[in-house]
Length: 76
Image (cartoon, rainbow, N blue to C red; front, side, top):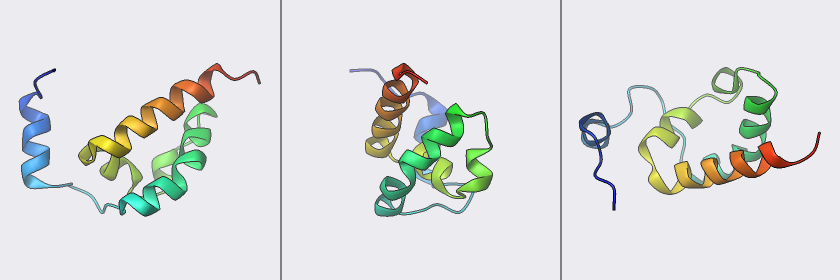
């Protein structure tokens, strides 16, 4: 198991610096968020709060990383 770095620990203790969405909202918006990222768009501006949530929620961050990897492999 990998040990979290100091920044990750502080983020977990202090909470997000920006407004954050819930896990339900994050999950609902994740497909669109990933599509925007892959298109080179500003996903954070288009769907505020998702990045802050991903930074603080390991479960949603793992889902995001998996979806991003899977979407990046699909043919255009």
